[in-house]
Length: 133
Image (cartoon, rainbow, N blue to C red; front, side, top):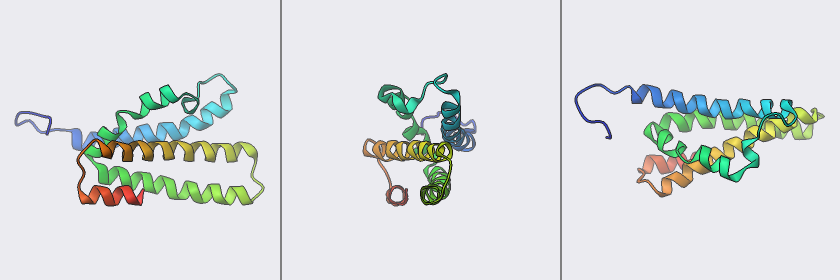
């Protein structure tokens, strides 16, 4: 809708890949932050940095929302299960902290996406996906 002309757009193929790479990088950053012992800034500790990171995400994800929602659900459910099992088992504190940090990122990301829906027009299908997330 934002492009003019007859040229084919690569956005449909690239935007989901970009959003998936971003989400994956946030999950991977948790281990880096925990392993760095203060050498790497934790975006989760700064509300301003976190808001800056998540402000544009709803617009990117909504471009191919169905693919992104499926990807997020595929990440969220196994992480939640692993976290639940880790809390009841004798798992090292570092591993539990990684799972907790990854779940924290996913909760913030899902919250940003649903918040973004408030400022955008959404179809009923998008509302259903929001509910699933």
